[in-house]
Amino acid sequence: MAKSKDHKKKPAQDIVVPKAASADLVWQGVDTQLPYRATAGHVDVRADDGKLIGKMFYLSFVALQDGEPNPQRPVTFAYNGGPGSCSVPIDFGGIGPKRVRPNGLDHIPASSPLEDNPHSILDATDLVFLDALSTGWSRVAEGVEDKQVFGIDADADCFARAISAWLQDNGRWSSPVYLYGESYGTVRNSVLMRLLGERSIKLTGVVMLSAIFDWAQVQPGSDAYYLGMMPTYAATAQHFGRAGKGVDVDEWFDQAMDFTEEVLAPALLKGDRLSAEREREVAERLSDFIGIPVKHILDKHLRVDLTDFRSTLLADERKVCGRLDTRFVSDAPSFVQTSNLWVAGEDASDDAVDSAWVSAFRAFCSDVLGYRSPARYMGNNYAKTMVSWIWRHDMPGTEETADAPNVALDIAVAMRRDPTIKLAIIGGRYDAATTWWNVAHDMSCQFLSDELKGRIVWHRYGCGHMAYVDEATNEAMGADMRAFYAMR
Image (tube, rainbow, N blue to C red; front, top):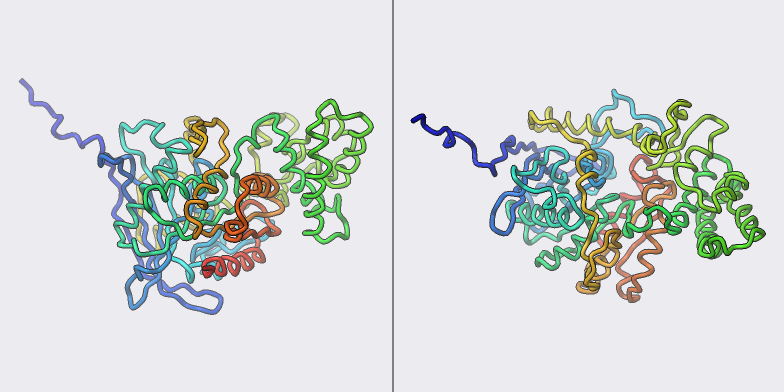
């Protein structure tokens, strides 16, 4: 009989990844220098029985004191969202010690060099950027079912295990632990705030950048969606000179917030019970705010969706404004490209920056750290995650599983359980992906005590979803975050 070749096969749980690679560098801040160690590698994500779920890629930046890490120094775990996005934008575009220089509202040139990021928060905390499983160079183990990885609760579980493993591997259990999430990363943050506490991993602080908490607001037919969009539309119309001329930008946004709550909300709640006369009155005032013709607004019964707004505001110039940052513009699609899904997915604000950031990250890993992987780096893996993602979430305290959850409940539970946690909520006027009004509304509906609300700081900037494309915002956000980390 021929001998079986099974003994030559690798165990099903094996994932072969490159060895971790490090380099000791010096970060030059605005007025300080700081030696640090950059490391690219993987951390095991294992189930309670020790079986491998996957290997999560990380890029860490750890400050050095006399050539060694300080085990008592704060450490921040940071990531983007999607779900299905790598962590490169928040790292090489945002808060990491290296960056590509911002180019305002123009495309970043391919020749843009990597430079020290003067507004990094490395002087306040060590940084660990994590790529969700199946994005970046993070790998899911063979035989692991999608439901163990792709979903609100499964994703938070995997990150909780990865964070625990990194703390264990690096001897950092004495460090104050922070979370810093952007976009869907704020959904992840919200669940992790509760979940890590339940697993006896104490958090010191959480940063929510461009947050979304109540998933119902993005569901078709939700009036909360149109209410959330209105102040962002108003800010965008002002930016392009279609409304709000001569008014301070923050005052204009506040006026739009007030109009949303005091005028638009009651009108939308009435539906077709709203009289034609009142509907026209509201439409005329709404037009003054958002720069869209009254007739167009009336045809939509006061409900202008984002794709419609982006395509209509600058239609006379044959331009379409961005989604993640509505100040960015591109030429309108060809007349044959009429798919709403296509228009919704095209975004000048993403096109202008994303590839430059990923290229800089790849160059840093390869040329500076000597970390090279034969695998494709998945800057995003939306095609896989969006199809497989389980949006259901076990809502704490309700004994209900929601298909469109509101994770603000998780935040409130975590803060009530541990009133020492501090929370920073950051957003921009021109972010149409995760709108400011909705987040403010979601948190106000948690009815936290004055003591707990005192643990929350709010920062609204003149930026879009990716706050760090603006140098002025970078500078302000860097200062505000240092103050947040110093907050007791």
